[in-house]
Length: 249
Image (cartoon, rainbow, N blue to C red; front, top):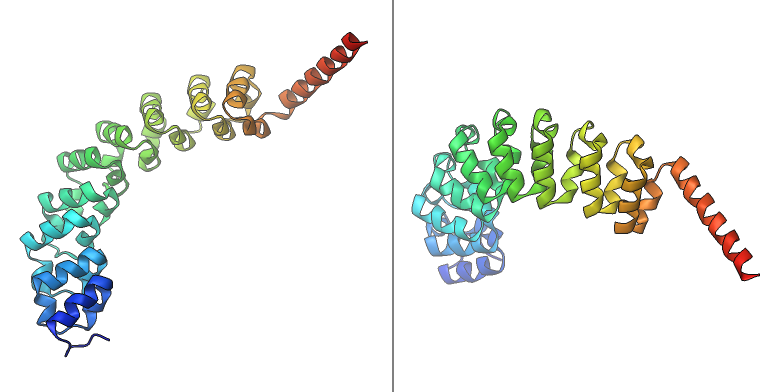
């Protein structure tokens, strides 16, 4: 077990196996760049136990975020406001944008650049920028399902929704109610994935063309078809079977 009396070699080997054992190392070894880098490479959250000097060391953090953007979480406040550091972290994972300084989350140019790297950065952008059409368009081009984080206004924007669905058809699930009742949008969705019929408004679940496209794409979509059309389909099937029997006589 590592403790504050453990040697450098002992701690170095230990953090390669479990970065979190850095917490038990001596203050001197929590300042050791090689040891801490090995620790964060094994577990980025182990930066929590590093010295404040290393948490604020720009060169060290820049190197560390190359391996995992999550290192940003425990970087110094100053570095979480450093555009170059944050962007490098976002390239590794857009989810870490949540750890960026608030001023960066509201910086339009920086957010625009970030969502181009990873659409998930949109999730933690300022409310104003989640309603910015250009920012959201760039985000959904990179990752369609981040439409979920766009403003209500933009989730009602047909062009934005269709653009998101190009990248990932499941974006349809987060389109506005109005667009989930738009025949063109629904038809585009079910052509890509029949199961998306589930999220269409009730009236379109009885639309023959939409239903045919859905079932053709995925037979399991049949369970989302309106009861009226489903009964009509059953009746047609029964008539066809009866006719076939008559022809066999």
